[in-house]
Length: 319
Image (cartoon, rainbow, N blue to C red; front, top):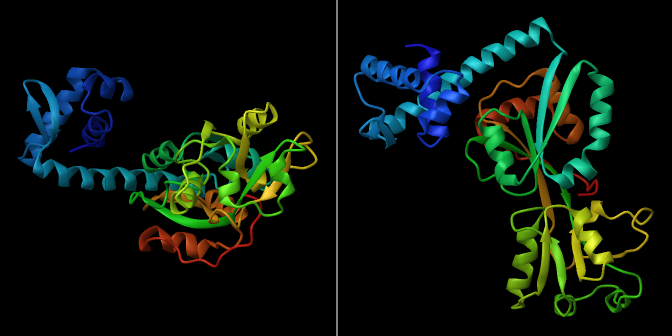
């Protein structure tokens, strides 16, 4: 048994049993991948994959359990490498953060600046995507840390931590009749075309829940992944915007005005996620502490094996 055999099995599952893609990922040939899998099955004395001819079509019942063990073995191999690097080159390396546009644009700049001052020899890589992509990148080891409001706490492959709470605001051009109301109701808001985030992004679920509970079907005429796009089309007159509070800056957004919406929509929790069981290097833990100061090293490392962290509710820092 060797690690190349284990990687072949893991990648076959990740690549939906497409051995050509597995071979490309592992920089080898398709026959080589097939041989590695067969040799492992022969050594274990059981089949891992169901087949139609030479094509893999799924996992056998034993295979479903075996791949879980393979994942743990490969994770521990990665942990060994990270632990060795921790002591040989303690504050050098690469840290990949997977996050949404909103977090990267509005919440992370101050944290990244502080991190770079403290760890100048660590190279940061910011990957932006949807919460579903973020969860997958962290769970597969393509990213070290994930930061998003939606979709992380439900993934059992991840350990998640409460980051900070934030609320939405309503934005409209100056002179819009809705701005005459200090605290507009959902009914009043629902009378206008709305522009907000795509489903599954930046607290959109709480927006949908509020309207559904009130029995109102809002006219959402446009959705986008980030607040900058939403604000652009609000300024263009296409509708009223609902965005994260941190995404509105009265000094920069001079063509817009905002109204608090915390009385309309439930508050949101941005979470930090890491791969469950993964070894976290010193600078990775420090990044999490900088982003969420109420978390500490002991809480972060203990949470890796205990489930979702029970942490105090932090004060809002924007959204």
